[in-house]
Length: 194
Image (tube, rainbow, N blue to C red; front, top):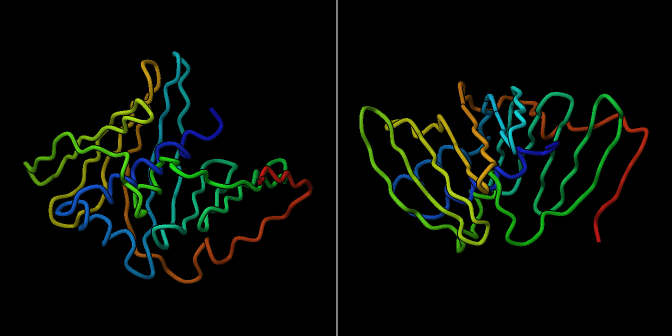
């Protein structure tokens, strides 16, 4: 359970690319330069264990973002992922595999494996329900009706796994961004790229 955000983030971004109307508006809001910073609370329940934390994510574009949750910073640029643990000064380099579904990958151009089940608009908000058949996952995205800012993302990934992200603040990125200034102090590097 060290990287629950890695699963939820690509699903969120893949949903953003799945169906025009509401999703196009959400994608536009999140990826228009210079990008946005989301402040959120995330909670993951897996087989009865509960993990929660507050964090931020800067979304620069569909394939560039930096998430900060607790002692970890996760920088994604294209398929290259760097996860830095501040407490241990360890940097892990990895690659996003093709078909990876997380909140951020929902913004990319590859939503073939995402199926929109329902979308409706009521009381100032829009809710989109979706499934990812290849992952045996379902979920929903709730956003503000006029600003298209995301408010809540829920992902059910299996019978005993739920991840919920509540977004409580959305701002345009100011300079310098955390993404651009990412320069971890590293004692140990683990390279998992093939």
